[in-house]
Image (cartoon, rainbow over all chains, first blue to last red; front, side, top):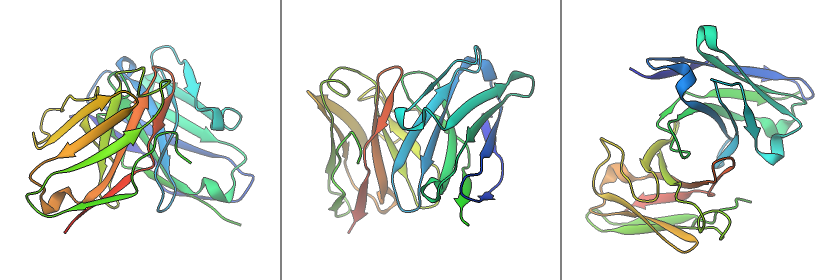
Length: 118
Length: 109
């Protein structure tokens, strides 16, 4: 069965970086784009961007152009999202999700809580 | 502020039907067929309920339906059940950029 398993919760100080992993299983990792979506406490969903696991190509939301890097390691079927220069308003649950096509997110990771606090 | 506008809340009684709207522009909803709807229960990851405007994934109840007219997409839930109480989000995808609506809290009275 398809699974996306994310790394555990993180606590970071303002200005630091965080790298969240998303390990895929149950399907061909390189066949589906991986998107990252975050949700601040009590707030809505916010799209961050995607990575094509096959080519490594990426596309980021304009808001995150200068702060996010998405990568992948096909040898272990894992996608990564690194967010730099963290601020308190980056405190959120970060999700990875699989896209068969058209932004139709059929499987989601369990979410990773990133807390930014001094 | 989200690019796609949804009502903050809607409510209905069991058995009734409700519709949630999602208003965008001619540059997103109006121009693309990739509109999806997600249901999210507290503390859970979102679940896709509708994709490509009106398609239902396998396993999703046929009480859920989607449509689009111009720059506005809509999600209709018929025969409301207590388990439908959740947050609902629309999304629009251009093939490169994706936007979510601000979310609608559905309360089943």
